[in-house]
Length: 122
Length: 330
Image (cartoon, rainbow over all chains, first blue to last red; front, side, top):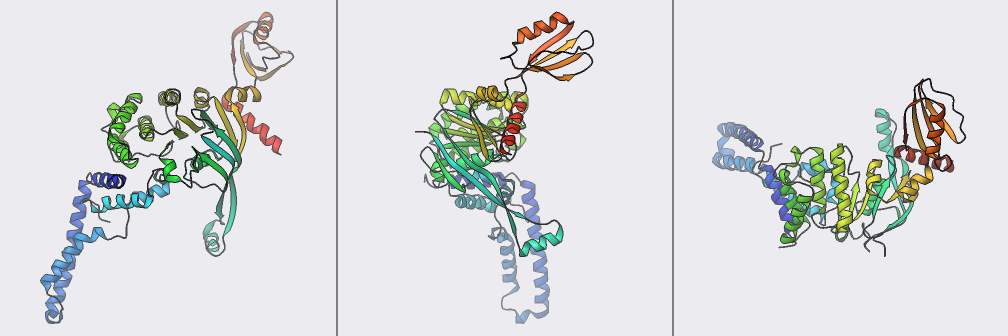
């Protein structure tokens, strides 16, 4: 596993840093619950009017909404914001000084950031 | 063979220019105007293993560009660069595994990680074998007195503490060459001394080749035997620091406080640089006017309260060097 060692380390380090942000994690969790509740209320209102025309049951819709809220953070259209910050400040020069494929390194970092339970909601 | 070889190196940046304001921004969308900035023009030098070379020059002279090309971050516009037999920007991965770099204005340690975790991460990134890593890390921790800082997150360190950790971080993979880009910038006096002492030991005891850029002339004086002066992208001189100083400015200064109002002095080879009511600042070349004779001559005729000799500040040596050069260019 020698070849994967730097990338695993980057993942681990980023994950570990994210674990420090407990308040942000709780806030993110609360936000997701709030939006989930609102979406369910909207659907429940629709079902209350026209339950027969719906292709899936309200119970299925509720499951779908909660899955969506839980997995929202995994949508791959954002990367670790610290990478963008490094590009702006010039710190990215240091990433070019590592004997690594920079994209693989950033990918591992971003995975660590995304998969951390505490990622702040944005 | 030289460890670092630079031949006819040139780097040109293209910079977009636009008129100010919204109108200018809109016009810039349609038609772009470029301006070429010659950051480096025909720079050549070589460096042997174990040497310690200082690059000095004003802001924007091209020092950092040179370091960035040598370390493989930037690609030159033209010219040839070889470091340890590799072309840095073509063989980047193999090259960067053998060098260490410290940029004085940036951090390579992760802000939120404790220092020790940052070191572990770098050891993994450079794939340093664990036993070797521990040995090297302990050596660096001892040399830089990092023991009390290891558990602290980097964001809590003072600048001086952080720079010491940065040096350790740059050296964990035991590089043969160390590039330092303004390593003492912003540091207080004791931290500067610590950094200089460390770099000197590293160079003398471990034979690490060091190339540093700096504004701080005391860095140069304390560290480098060889100095390259660079200005407006051109290499102005390359040689021992002593000869740079001797060549550009051999002059000495004599500061005299008189008991009575300062007299008019007429001594050949001596010029009065400044005067107040009771003091004089004289400039002279000790090769033509020996210092003891000058002092004796003045003390014999006048009532002197205090007297001391000084060299011109190194900043002044360099400034004068630039002036000389741009004059010869024009």
